[in-house]
Length: 138
Image (cartoon, rainbow, N blue to C red):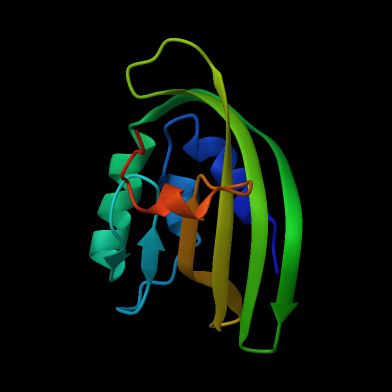
């Protein structure tokens, strides 16, 4: 499976969603689930989600990828990684380091690997069970 997605992330954190969009399937079952909102299904919604998310980043760069797991058959494959990058986020004017836990599923379509699911979350270390409730103790 290609590392074009790593190059696409580098462009994405500079505010350019186009290289990442180019890697996606155009089929109705494509899904993107990013830290900015609920999952988006179908090419039109996935593309709009990527475009909107890219506006939250500027002047960034990918700084590293930690491959956790990967597997592929002739038709499907996945990678699980920690993606590390730095970028200006939202209205911020400082480059900040960021890390995302990412699962990407690829499907072979017309001889090329295409992303059919990308799920990214900022959880990269152990957390207490209470952290998922959204309720603070005290």
